[in-house]
Length: 143
Ligand code: IDP
Ligand code: MG
Image (tube, rainbow, N blue to C red; front, top):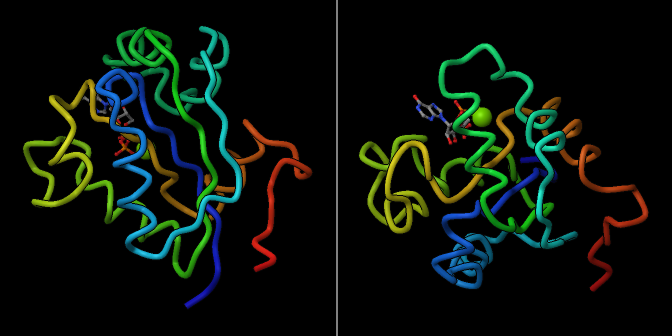
């Protein structure tokens, strides 16, 4: 297995439920390490840019509105196989289909408001990390 970094966002619904710490604990319990984190209120332009890949989808406008409805916690997680592991800990996009014990099964109320984002592949992880963080903001774990 290879050490990877992935972008994680705790979305406005989960921040508003005040479960940021519980969600980070679920990542830590499976061995992922936070190497960068910041709370942000996204602008419309940032949300549209981040989700540009979905701009032709019928839910795009609602998704952008949701993502700017309150602050988010943007993080970079590091670990063995971090990209797939993060997706596994998150659970399926639709919380109704998410496996028990996953973040989405535990905290998400609908497919529109599903608690977390996670990169889906090495190339998207690289692009999504640099969308939010400068290299100097990533803090390698030295101990
Ligand atoms: P992912 O977040 O599990 O990677 P994507 O297919 O990349 O899922 O979709 C991005 C986000 O867009 C989802 O997390 C969800 O918030 C929203 N979304 C996806 N599909 C739907 C849908 O069918 N209806 C409403 N919102 C959706
Ligand atoms: Mg996705």
